[in-house]
Amino acid sequence: MHIIGPTQQRGHVLLVAGDVAVRRRSVQVAPSANLAALGVVPVSALLNSGIPSDTTYLDGVRDPNTALTRLRTAAATQGPLLVYLSGRLTVDRRSRRLHLALAGTTAASVRYTALPWDWLGAELGGRPPGLTTVLLDLAADKDAWPLLQEYGSLPAAPSTEVYGVVSPPGFAGGGNVVSSYTRHWIDQLRCSPSRPANLQLHVLAVGAAALPPGALVLPTARELGVPAQDPVPARHPGPAPDRTADGAPHHTVPVGQQEAVPGPPSAAPPPEAVQDPRPHIHALATSGRHAEAATLAQAWEQHASRAYGFTSPESVQWVEIRADLARMAGDFRLATRLWTGVGRTRLAYQPPDAAEVHAAAAGALYCWTQLKDGAEVREAGTELMDLLRSLPSVDPKYLHMAQQRLELLHRAPSDR
Image 1 (cartoon, rainbow, N blue to C red):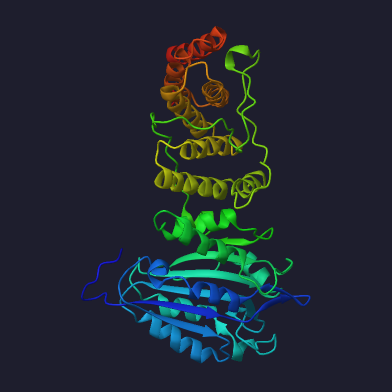
Image 2: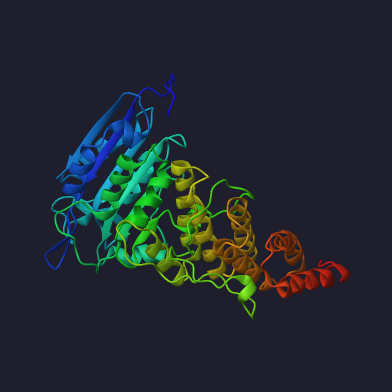
């Protein structure tokens, strides 16, 4: 909630519908439909603020100077500002500048009929940090997409939070309906027990939306800076469901019945489900976009914790998903710590011979055996040994193997 003060008197919502994005006569993005859907959402929910606010709709505008005037007025507000842009992203072929196509913009008239993208940054760049959000639901045409690929993102003012998606030029259109990303952003505003933060809304919408392959999701993982992720706390009250990292039932054989060093639960994608983010997250991981997959999973875990509590099965399930994503990314140190934390969590509220507890121990033990750095082996091994000792049905040879490895490292010179 923003506090009303002498320098923060009103908020503003600016909704801009650019030109319709069309491919082979099929509508890809219908900006007017998106604006109509956002128009019925309370401004207080859009801004996450209860202060008095103004709303400006620009639908069908043809003059970029008119759009600039409205943008400049919105940027002058002293309170929170949301700018929503939907439509077709194009480029001036002469200057290679990105533009938001307005109604009637053609390839030959971009310089005179479209809104230059850098105008947006110039007008919003002077606003204080933390007060400005830009929300995008765009499709790039065949001229703009190569430039976006070259940039790797979409330029924005440093003081502005930018969330959204830019679809590539080749995807099949969805018709004159609300775009999937915008629809799910609105749905999350309506169904969440409390108003999520903008980043949370973004990742929930991305996870649930049926985005076309290759869509540019903003901010990118690089722009987020994807911080190092801490392990789950040692004790969360309440059991988690019998699920693997991909949401499917566990099929891991209990540790005590295995003959080889056990592997973690499988990460095969779950069956398609409505608004299920796991297929999208799994697709990111399997395509090598591990940082983005981890960011989405961590955000879903935080959402589950806030919505249902740390005692909830939903929260612990997302910790398991994060652990398996870390394993897929080759981050065995994080994976070991997460699986060990899950094992201790489950052990606090489930019997020591429960298959779920053994599955977590199996994942932790496997990932620990993949560690090469002696210091990391020692650090993670101590907690892992405590977990294994708490499971009477674990095959003693695994406990002996882990103990022997730790003793050898303790006798060896420390890694420097």
